[in-house]
Length: 333
Image (cartoon, rainbow, N blue to C red; front, side, top):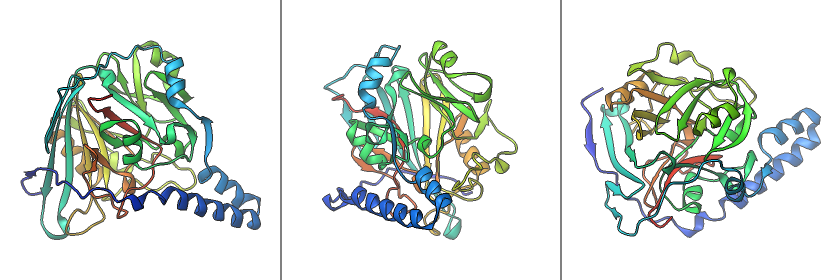
């Protein structure tokens, strides 16, 4: 790669109100798919039910977390935060955004960096699509962010595609089915990669875990690129897409306690950004000072949101629905 050139994220035009009906159209498509599947037989109907139809387990996550959280939220609001095109400072977090472009022609890679310093670890929160917990419940990253008053957000681990993994969000346990390498954010500000199969959700919460992510793999540990990451399979179940090759990526890295770096790499657009391999993703994170870095859901899901705008260019030509986001609330929250 050539030497990076740092630019400011470009503001995009305001979102058109015509984007609102998308969710309705998605529901119509899903309903049609289900009808066809039912006519084709039980096996196909099962697949549609498992991977397309929404199954809501908890319909009001905000209320559920308020009733079940064992951790008191230490985040307070401020009325004198300042926002510019590149930085946001409040009593919750300092956020600095930049755009990096390397290479030329079809080898060009474009990625967006958000360096975040939290004043309290619980300022980094998670939110679910539709404020509901379950499978196949999706909204765009920007829609979930706006519903939660976020100033900054990235897509999460798409927990709703699968029924395994440890899911702890904002100090509350939602799922306890250890299956893979996870990432745990603690209330004291440190972050750890861990093996889900060697512990359980209750133990993690008792030890101070605030949020977990279940996707992966970890791509940087102890400041070095992890070997063998090009061959990792996160899931082998029906409908899973490979995470290998040059792909759009969403990454989270740890520089120090309460000091994080989020990266969204655009891809599948030769001349603008081809995407990156796992090893290239790890190298980016090391170059940004991350001692630990972890891969989140990527591809068409990879989205970074800041101050009311999607700052990257999702590979689908627009945002793809996802199950969940990581976010930092704006000053009015």
